[in-house]
Length: 174
Image 1 (cartoon, rainbow, N blue to C red):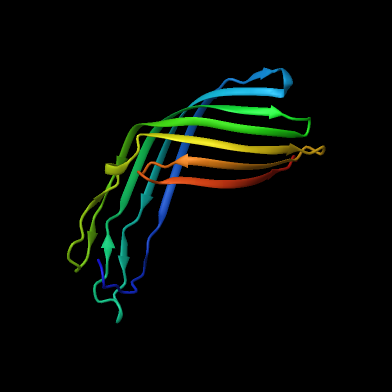
Image 2: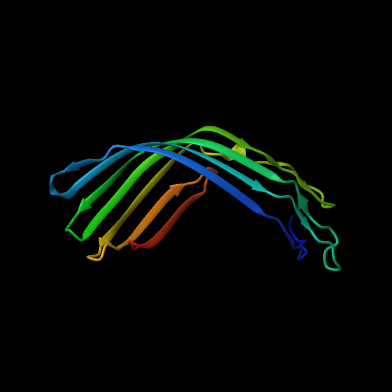
């Protein structure tokens, strides 16, 4: 809608759960090179409660939409590479692809006094095969801790949506 807006607000809740089974085969080569081809199956379920804006003096046409649910089962294949530059410093890379085996998304059904709102299907723009790649390094400290930094690129299930992120992790032994 162009030229008209109201400061509406409301609340909803998102719940999500996932499980993944991964099988990999680690191969160690001379020079500190480790290759690990892998296959995995991942199942994800998500629920989003219905949303409703609260009417007020500044909101004459509150918006609402129905609850959503989505589930997907995805097959994943890829290769992890770990190169030990020294006993302490490692370079790592990974590349893979995921393909949907099954998806089940509900429709977004908006309701409001505004004209022109229509039902939206989340499934109509989904990408069935998605790429993923990462590049990073980690340090193995003498006391058993591990510090890692990783850059990750990933195609998301919805068309035109790709994410890039950098993560840093620290793991300590107990």
